[in-house]
Image (cartoon, rainbow, N blue to C red; front, side):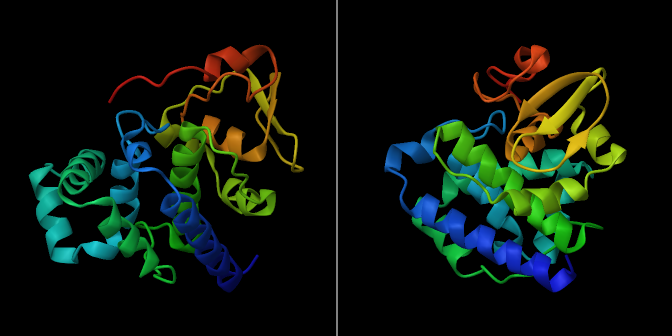
Length: 212
């Protein structure tokens, strides 16, 4: 898939998530997601932050977090979720469907990964029946390298991931089977609701996430 095709997938993912978010009940914005410690509104505040914040403000926030990007992201998500109503967050997404923000060094694949993973944090966390097209998830999985897995800190030793809806596998060991999107969440260190994974190691990757 070339870069233009990847950007087309980014736009499609944002449009689809906009439709999901626009249909949420007010109380669902305060529901927990798979991103530990973040409700729906924190996740949306995080994904729309690059659209709403200048480079200068980002640098100020990063300095305030002593250069720790993860700490900065958490602080900004909590701050903006507290200050901005759901309508403003939705508007930021609606107005930036075609925005070409990319994470540092991530390119178009990084942008797609960011949107797909956090979209799943919301939909799986809420128990919504949304299936990301397997081919789109496959693009994200194709960019996963050992350093990406290491970043998320998940221990996949002795486990072989096998997608049931895509010709994709990762690792060696005892088989763990599931939808490609659920295995992507496993790689990202998320703990899935029970029943979404199949195999002896399923319990190891299921259950409630630990708080931040």
